[in-house]
Length: 155
Image (cartoon, rainbow, N blue to C red):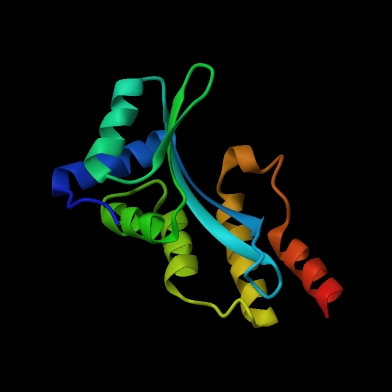
């Protein structure tokens, strides 16, 4: 988990995520899960300023920095860290409040990944979350269908 953040820093991060960030869900292979799949939530901010991204990493104490061609990304993928940062910014976010709520629902409610229906429900929530991300619409996969197909192959 991250550091203690002042109200001002939480509000500032919420604004950055609202404007230059994304709250995403994806399906990943995970050998320790019964169906070898899991839903992973990630939060990222993309900026052209390396210093600003480094500052975000420093004040939160979580995530990693990735350098793209002309931008820098702060990415949080760890389950506890994503839950922490989303809980910190939720009261202050405006544009991505629905995404934050859905992501926290996926993270906080321990759906039993050993149960087909629960895993499918998680995938449906991931699909809902992905539908909010403009860039994901053209390249995202239908997670619920992936889960359904994988489950039927593993029966």
